Length: 223
Length: 223
Image (cartoon, rainbow over all chains, first blue to last red; front, side, top):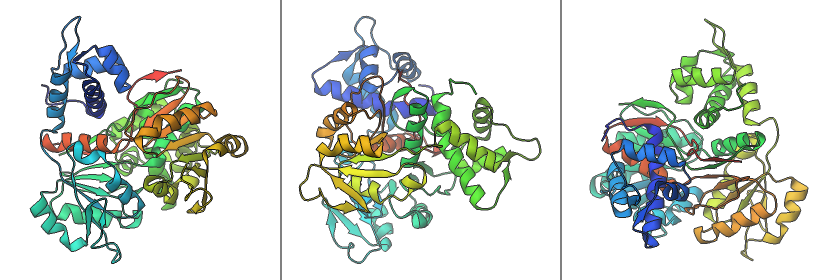
């Protein structure tokens, strides 16, 4: 496999994986690129090119084997291991993420939530303990935390990021509007809802409709 | 301006816009492409190409005029008009979005939230009224709703989308894990948190770090 898989390809792999898993659940054992692309909301030619770039090939007239697709894409995405998560900020958004059922089953168990509020610390939200900030070192050590999700108010998001980085977490998902400053060795993705709305507004005022998925990196790469 | 602005460019414009607005707030009046790219978390060459594709040009040795940048990018994104929003689903995620301060100031006022729960209907969340489903036609008519945000449980997300589409809403932002089926005239973007985590996991296990932003469309275009 080409070590330099493009960021755009990486951004589309989760949709292919989900489509393949969904089809497998429905009892489908092999799938054409057209059908898989339709399920994933992607363009068939793009999908074929993406999978070929990962050396994932189908059989002419039969298509891709579903089990092979799922295992290969999972391997590329690093989903053959668990990625324990800590959520920093137990407000509405943090709670919504804790309630979100999809994390653990996709390999991202939420080990704990961190908050500064004395009313929240010591409670559990959807079975997830809320702990104070000073428990982070213990969590990272004992629970092997690899990912930090920041759902704090924007004005303390940088502080939260600094704390995560200081304790060795190198993958951050930022849900605040703050643009975070992290060292080049840390991967930080931002999910900004206003950005999504602005993109919707572009397509609508242009009279173009777009069936679209999520995140492809913005293009700047470090490390 | 080229009418066929690429989806990847569209996906990066909101970050450029935010960076330009931030710099303007700090009293900056003109900016180099390098500085703007740094603020936006983008690659300078990509930024220059993107802006050139929109006929947005800077002055050699001076850079881009901030006011011009903000007005031109806003115009391209259709942000010279208001895009009233309805949020379907007043659970934790819906509440988190209602609490999110950034919508109205970026041209996306939240007119109402829709929920089926008798305990929630009639209340207000962060000043936003929660109304029953059958008020949607009146809302669309009187409040000129252009965007629907779906934050329901996944198993009723398609039903929510069908309802929005039936009442003439053609821009949908989907926060559930459900892949929505909408007519080709409707633009639907999905924000799937597990997708973002899978992308993070890719970069981490590859030992590559990526400073990244949000969503670029998956590539399939209709309408």
